[in-house]
Image 1 (spheres, one colour):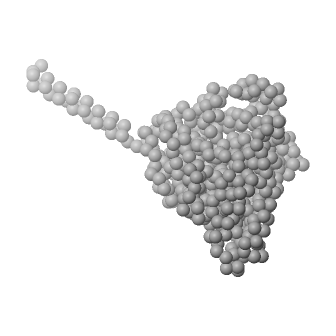
Image 2 (image 1 turned 90 degrees about the vertical axis):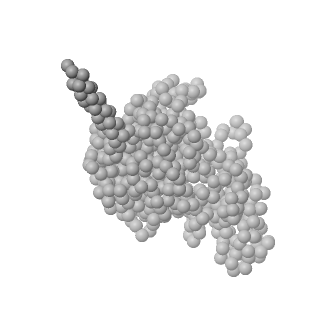
Length: 538
């Protein structure tokens, strides 16, 4: 073979190799197909310490599927005083309550002088409930809204949660439906704000009514007691049994605070995935779910660690079943799952008296009575206080105006008086909060309240104290619930096509989750997202 031919062959081989390498590079750089199903999961009370403790017992199909294969943001911060509803709104809007309008599940109505749902909307009707709710109080868009808008409303957006507030926040303004378990008869319920009442929920309301099952429903340990780690011996001798009896007016609320509700939510979610063929079309659908592993409040024992561990293990099994339904439907290769821990409802059980733990009682009713007498002595006769709710004292602005009194001065006087009362650890006027005159642990309090719903003076009660005779508290509030300072950080897991396993240990603001998930989905962030998305490794 001539030198010329050898050179020609060599050139062709080199060209072929270069072309092949270019093709491979282009293929490697091509974007992963966008998910057609988004599953958002909010877990009340979830923390990574418990997950790590129970990790040897977690199944490869449940939590460990997220832990081993997803992105783990292990230290997400919400700041102080947020309940599950407010935290859910922060996660899904990328904005704080000061912007998104949702400071808590319940707020105080100064005209009717009682607390009400933040989402109360008398202009709407309830479906399978007398409750009348809508997302009107939610002032900005949510991640679910942006998913629906992205495909011009063709995609389907659903939510299922134990409580109405969380279900509606997760469905947003543009969702097809939001379903929850009502407290009166345990039926799956919704609001006429949403156009759909999904057929799987209707079917379960008739063929598998909770009211017909709850009397025989027991919650006991799901595993042998010796398999629960770090469990003292006495707990192995006296395992728990919780029942939801017909003569208990709080039985549906107790059920909703137990892992039993997680299982029913999972079963309904599986029906949604198969019935509506979620994620199997060339558009993006979204299914949001609310779960709980929070300490169980309807017990006389302050030590609920075995109940909490059992709730984690039961939820692990429920997640495995949920993910199995996804595998049988659109497949995980077409699905983005993000699971976030959110703060549990505030409070804890009173410790047994034999431990001599400092304890006291703070009565808002007595505080208001003393305050009113104090203000009468200073400014003359009148009803100077409007009410109290969740640490907020509301002044009677009409009385103040009628007496030509100075509102700011009276706020200062009230704050000074309350600061001297037993059990009060912190007092702030609304001016203090707006100006940022706060103790370090409450530095984010301004962001976590809504001025529209805030009181004139806000107090923090000593940890270990119980708030009693609170006229705005639910009548069936569990007894012995004491204050507990609980500023915790929570994990978030993101599992998505093309997203490799990674762990981020840096503390992150909870507002970063919505824009980060939006970036992975390649859709717009919610319209009030305050932070740039986290740049995950792809």
